[in-house]
Length: 179
Image 1 (cartoon, helix red, strand yellow):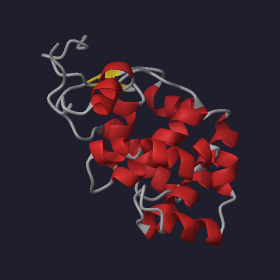
Image 2: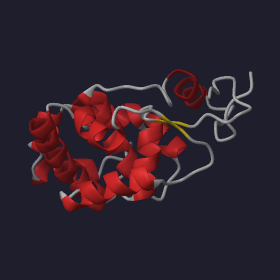
Image 3: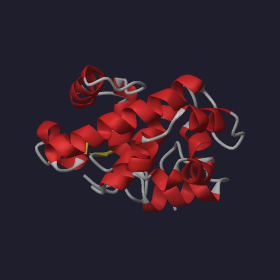
């Protein structure tokens, strides 16, 4: 089967992610938080690198329990900063906790993070190929930054929207491509 050009066919984890998860609409707050956290750690790195560490991130971040992440203290930050199984960038670790608190506030304000996203998408799934940002990702990025989130630039948010299925971007040659 032909897959998107970015999918490393030598990595079973990547193939499974491509085939079963990427581009599939998922509105669960837990999933949306996990993907936002992972995408923010991906800044400057490859998604494959993050995906290969995903299970370690899950364990290290209490399976993305937002209440637990929001309560992380200096001791937990230091623990994360020396964990060789995840990305140990202190700025990204700090941002992950700040972003969790802001994410939780957005959920409280809108009822769910997906409902917040719908204020930008109007419930629409976008079909785009070959882009790294759009007016949609620009707008969401700008609002998240205004709220105080870090590592949520327009390219990261565009990738996030692709991952969670708001933007559907399978290559035309990919067996999952649809208009």
